[in-house]
Length: 111
Image (cartoon, rainbow, N blue to C red):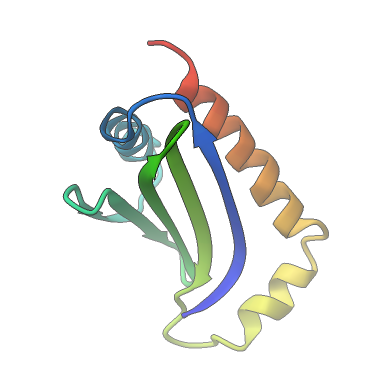
Protein backbone atom coordinates (compact mmCIF):
# COMPACT_ATOMS: atom_id res chain seq x y z
CA UNK A 1 0.00 0.00 0.00
CA UNK A 2 1.37 3.39 -0.97
CA UNK A 3 1.44 6.18 1.60
CA UNK A 4 -0.33 9.32 0.39
CA UNK A 5 0.03 11.51 3.50
CA UNK A 6 1.60 11.29 6.96
CA UNK A 7 1.44 13.29 10.17
CA UNK A 8 2.71 12.82 13.73
CA UNK A 9 2.63 14.65 17.03
CA UNK A 10 2.77 14.29 20.78
CA UNK A 11 -0.07 14.44 23.31
CA UNK A 12 0.82 15.13 26.96
CA UNK A 13 -1.14 12.16 28.31
CA UNK A 14 -0.31 8.46 28.93
CA UNK A 15 -0.18 6.35 25.75
CA UNK A 16 -2.87 3.89 26.92
CA UNK A 17 -5.30 6.70 27.66
CA UNK A 18 -4.58 8.42 24.32
CA UNK A 19 -5.09 5.17 22.42
CA UNK A 20 -8.45 4.47 24.09
CA UNK A 21 -9.64 8.02 23.40
CA UNK A 22 -8.50 7.74 19.78
CA UNK A 23 -10.21 4.37 19.33
CA UNK A 24 -13.49 5.63 20.82
CA UNK A 25 -13.41 8.70 18.62
CA UNK A 26 -12.80 6.69 15.45
CA UNK A 27 -15.41 4.05 16.37
CA UNK A 28 -18.01 6.73 17.04
CA UNK A 29 -17.31 8.66 13.85
CA UNK A 30 -20.55 7.62 12.20
CA UNK A 31 -18.84 6.70 8.94
CA UNK A 32 -19.41 3.27 7.35
CA UNK A 33 -15.83 2.07 7.66
CA UNK A 34 -14.15 -1.19 8.52
CA UNK A 35 -11.95 -0.95 11.59
CA UNK A 36 -8.93 -3.06 12.55
CA UNK A 37 -7.74 -2.71 16.15
CA UNK A 38 -4.69 -4.14 17.94
CA UNK A 39 -4.78 -2.84 21.51
CA UNK A 40 -1.49 -4.50 22.49
CA UNK A 41 0.41 -2.62 19.79
CA UNK A 42 -1.85 0.45 20.14
CA UNK A 43 -2.69 0.36 16.44
CA UNK A 44 -5.99 1.14 14.77
CA UNK A 45 -6.88 1.40 11.09
CA UNK A 46 -10.08 2.55 9.45
CA UNK A 47 -10.85 1.68 5.87
CA UNK A 48 -13.68 2.94 3.71
CA UNK A 49 -14.61 3.86 0.21
CA UNK A 50 -12.72 2.20 -2.61
CA UNK A 51 -9.26 3.44 -1.67
CA UNK A 52 -9.03 5.05 1.78
CA UNK A 53 -7.19 3.50 4.72
CA UNK A 54 -6.16 5.62 7.69
CA UNK A 55 -3.68 4.02 10.09
CA UNK A 56 -2.89 5.28 13.59
CA UNK A 57 -0.17 4.20 16.04
CA UNK A 58 0.27 5.42 19.59
CA UNK A 59 3.67 4.92 21.24
CA UNK A 60 5.33 6.13 24.42
CA UNK A 61 7.18 9.44 24.27
CA UNK A 62 9.06 11.28 27.04
CA UNK A 63 6.38 14.01 26.85
CA UNK A 64 3.43 11.56 26.87
CA UNK A 65 2.18 9.74 23.79
CA UNK A 66 3.37 10.00 20.20
CA UNK A 67 0.52 9.60 17.71
CA UNK A 68 1.36 8.73 14.11
CA UNK A 69 -1.15 8.84 11.27
CA UNK A 70 -0.79 7.60 7.73
CA UNK A 71 -3.26 7.73 4.83
CA UNK A 72 -2.62 4.90 2.39
CA UNK A 73 -3.99 3.83 -0.95
CA UNK A 74 -5.79 0.55 -0.23
CA UNK A 75 -7.53 0.28 -3.61
CA UNK A 76 -7.79 -3.25 -4.95
CA UNK A 77 -8.76 -1.93 -8.41
CA UNK A 78 -7.98 1.37 -10.09
CA UNK A 79 -5.06 1.86 -7.71
CA UNK A 80 -3.32 4.04 -10.29
CA UNK A 81 -6.19 6.54 -10.22
CA UNK A 82 -6.04 7.40 -6.51
CA UNK A 83 -2.95 9.65 -6.59
CA UNK A 84 -4.25 11.30 -9.75
CA UNK A 85 -7.68 11.90 -8.20
CA UNK A 86 -6.13 13.29 -5.03
CA UNK A 87 -4.09 15.80 -7.01
CA UNK A 88 -7.40 17.37 -7.98
CA UNK A 89 -8.02 17.96 -4.25
CA UNK A 90 -5.48 20.76 -3.98
CA UNK A 91 -3.83 20.75 -0.59
CA UNK A 92 -4.76 17.14 0.32
CA UNK A 93 -1.63 16.59 2.44
CA UNK A 94 -2.07 19.97 4.11
CA UNK A 95 -5.69 19.19 4.94
CA UNK A 96 -4.63 15.86 6.48
CA UNK A 97 -2.09 17.67 8.68
CA UNK A 98 -4.60 20.33 9.77
CA UNK A 99 -7.23 17.70 10.61
CA UNK A 100 -4.64 15.65 12.47
CA UNK A 101 -3.59 18.71 14.47
CA UNK A 102 -7.20 19.18 15.57
CA UNK A 103 -7.38 15.51 16.54
CA UNK A 104 -4.25 15.87 18.71
CA UNK A 105 -5.79 18.89 20.45
CA UNK A 106 -8.98 16.91 21.14
CA UNK A 107 -7.01 13.92 22.46
CA UNK A 108 -5.11 16.20 24.83
CA UNK A 109 -8.20 17.98 26.18
CA UNK A 110 -9.44 16.70 29.55
CA UNK A 111 -12.72 14.76 29.33
